Length: 322
Ligand code: UT7
Image (cartoon, rainbow, N blue to C red; front, side):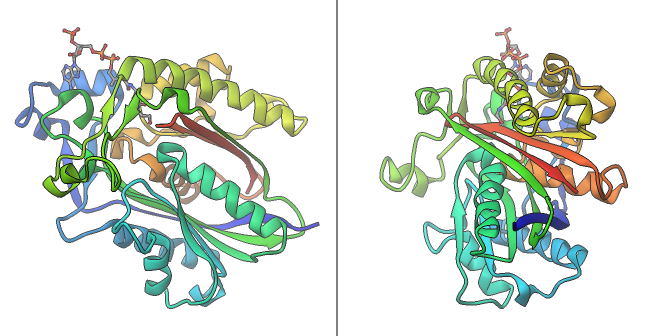
């Protein structure tokens, strides 16, 4: 049997730091409100001439280096993003050109904050079926571009960044299982109400902004992300004590704590990076994974449960043996 294994991780955050103190000068808020309600201390903002593919490339090159492969070994790129550089070509095609590859499939998936899990689930199936042997899976966002920086209910939450993994074929897992869900009935709780086909003039005017019913999203995020932990461990015939690390979507420390409490996961096993970069949407899970690998928490042989939740609603998980 063929399985896919994560053999390298990478992450990248833009240089510009926007602190809670900075936000006090922009909107009616306080450092204390933001940190106590969200756990976020600062977020990164891409430079005006820095685009999603730039962030994706930086994180991808770090993952390539960590996996000790050459970029030409890659034979599949899946990029999860909500904030593509262009309507088309896909950000994955732009990234493929940067990495000097050609011919193999490169495409984007869009599942907002759950995007990395969806991209990983797709890439894992390519590898398991023999359709790819060395996949680059990226979550990359310039979410700051779809934020209304006068709306205090949303602008304090989000930031820019990218995370990547190299997924290679092997004879043992690796990715043990992935679990993906969507429910479009909740499309009106978290959305950007414009696109190419609808209200495109607002895109042109630069007023395509994220809108959210924060409290409702909070409740759903906690329920979906704790239930999917049970689904994931049960599918593998495991118990929660068999999980070495939980790496949840990094949106709000209160959501992360509530998920851990509801799912009865030891808080010491939960990776939390939200204070440094806020909610980076599809980049959040691979950024947190990369951080935990590089600081030595996640080690070879550890079982890691990744999970994400966001607009759609869309949510997903993956159980990985590193
Ligand atoms: O990836 C999935 C995407 N999103 C999320 O996961 C986010 C989910 N939601 C949340 O994280 C939280 O609901 C928020 C952080 C957005 C809000 O926290 P909350 O504890 O649910 O606050 P709230 O919305 O109930 O607002 C409490 C008060 C309100 O004032 P009133 O109506 O009680 O007078 C808000 O107007 O806090 C006010 N408020 C603020 N005050 C200072 C809202 N935003 C701010 C702010 N600074 N930035």
